[in-house]
Image 1 (spheres, rainbow, N blue to C red):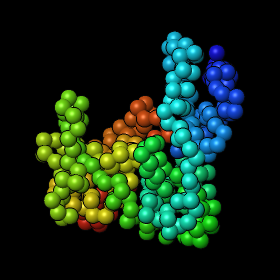
Image 2 (cartoon, one colour; image 1 turned 180 degrees about the vertical axis):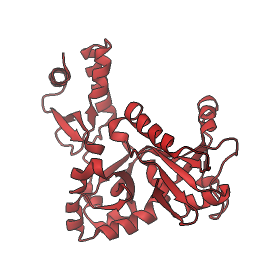
Image 3 (tube, rainbow, N blue to C red; image 1 turned 120 degrees about the vertical axis):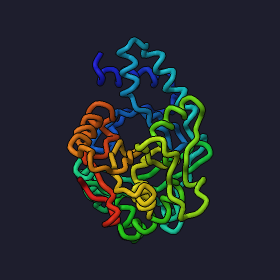
Length: 307
């Protein structure tokens, strides 16, 4: 069966297994870069929040031979594990004074998200856009984010500048930076996590750096989600560049992280651009692509520019 037939079959099978008052629905959910995913939601009476379970990966498993019955069984298990037992009090999001301490930013591609950006407050940054999120943390469901839309600004009677000011303070505080060398990735897999991060810096002036056994570094945040925005943290790239005594090339690996490469005269900039494009086309999910551009942090200008 094709994907649409598959989603309808899974929905019908889930309805048979669910309780009488549960409502099973399929929803086409907009994601980053204009990508839409097919989500399945099971709504239970008396609860105002339910997880959305995306079906694309399950369809790939079905094509490889996994049974629809087994897939439905896992979906129902996920639903029971991730659904709150009671309704969520949303008062925390209705008043700006309650929400402001948890407003953070992330980076997205400007051109690929033009339709979305028409409906959300944002700040243009090179060929990217800074958008704003409410970072929600709960001991039952873990971390989640709520994208802030223009209608939220109207309710709060605030401006994009207000969000930007709050997010610049909150994001480095709530989502601390993390830097590791490429060689450390293999060590992490073999010996457990060990990263040089903001918690290990003895002073605010200490430069983010790790063992100088390589020249390529991955920069993200502790959550390793939407971590590319770390390049906006005040003085972070500047301190790293001063430690290396070089300008820093920034390769946008995905919306979740960037790769830092101390700049040398013999580096082929065109080759790096082609590399980024190829990786985006072959290795990165469409909704996780940040940009095909290559950036440079200039020590002289103290800012990031497009190459």
